[in-house]
Amino acid sequence: MKVVTRFAPSPTGLLHIGGARTALFNYLYAKHHKGRYLLRIEDTDKERSTETSLKAIFDGLKWLGLSGDEPAIYQSKQINRHKEIANELAISDKAYFCYLSQLEMEKIRKRNKEQGKPFRSPWRDPSFNGDRQEKPVLRLRMPDEGHTIIQDLVQGNVRVLNKQLDDLVLMRSDESPTYMLAVVVDDHDMGITHILRGDDHLNNAIRQTKIYEALNWQPPVFAHIPLIHGSDGTKLSKRHGAIGIDAYKDMGFYPEAMINYLSRLGWSHGNDEYFSKDQAISWFNGNSIGRSPANFDMKKLITINAYWLRKESFESLHTQILAHQNLHENRQVSTKFKERLKILLPQLLKRTSMIGELASQLDYLVYDGRPKIESENCKFLTKQSCEVLKLFSEVIDLLPSDSTSFQAFINEWLVEQQLTMKDLGVPLRVVLTGSKNAPAIFDIIQSLGFDEVKTRINEICI
Ligand code: GLU
Image (cartoon, rainbow, N blue to C red; front, side, top):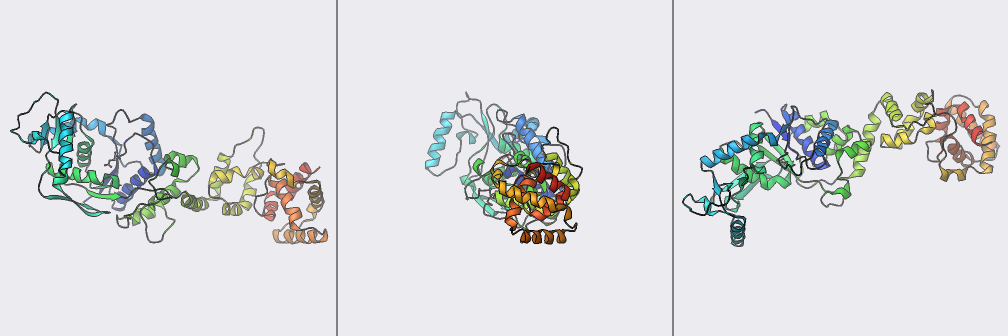
């Protein structure tokens, strides 16, 4: 059997972490089995569906490389087909028209609930002769006897007694199909064989199975995945970072990192922490999806991003840094920038996880001449420390060029001057980079070159 999965978002909000993970799991499962992964937009709720949300979903999926294998299906366009099936169910007596008013319905529901019974309408009985003033809804005739089992890849066998199931509505009184009916018809028509989704849909799956059975259709295999929780163990909310996927893109996360992280939310492959989408495809066979909720952990996501940042090529990082740099008016990017970056990048990558964070600290490499000095660092440029820097600038021309020798030379010079590395290091770092939190001073000197070091000291310490 060829595996066909789908992601079926409703365009009523952003594409969140949870939705993106559902899309990814369906994608991975299909690709692992050399099958197809499809997209269906469940846009029947016209009031809540928006263009903005639709765009956010498409953009987010595209960024993650999770666009469907075929153009998306729009549920709202299948409405005639849903009605056709609803009529078939009515004709075959698997469903019945119910003319109860809202009030009557509520009374029965309440009474039955008190008696521990499911909702049943008197209109189930073909001989019932009630008032037909109301426009009817179409209800599925649930069996009273027996039970329904779904075999779930994550939850195992889930068994429910049929007498616990309400006669659910398939078509409303305005003849619009309900979600329950639309999902079943669309999944069947799209040839969906496997559905991986949040376990908040587990109850729906039981009811949907009854619709499949009424139609003599083969239900798909389900995998209901525990919902994602925040790091404090409560349901994921905005407070925990449940923002749209686009926000992660804007924060500078790499799609590879997002995929790597999302796939680990509720699924694992041994102790593997860092892996590519292709590796995940080769491993994702539907086993090893956890039964307890995964916790969203921003710190872990950042750590994974750091791994992917380090895997970027030098050329690519160089381009990305320039693109991120808020290029200042009237300031030319130094012709030496690339050379400088090459020397310092290994150091810089040890200290950062995000490309934006990295790029924002590099003005001192991108531009020649004095850097912008952060105001809190001006205090390190006292008269005394400037004296030290000026003294140092006088010996720069004498420095040997290879890095081990110039380090030894500077250390000896400090001893001669009865100074410590602290006397030179902090003010020099401030003068060269604008900050005192830059990489090791010898690496900075090597990266900028002796002439540039001298120029900066002399521009600032006059
Ligand atoms: N449209 C539903 C949702 O966004 C998903 C339906 C399904 O996966 O069956 O929650």
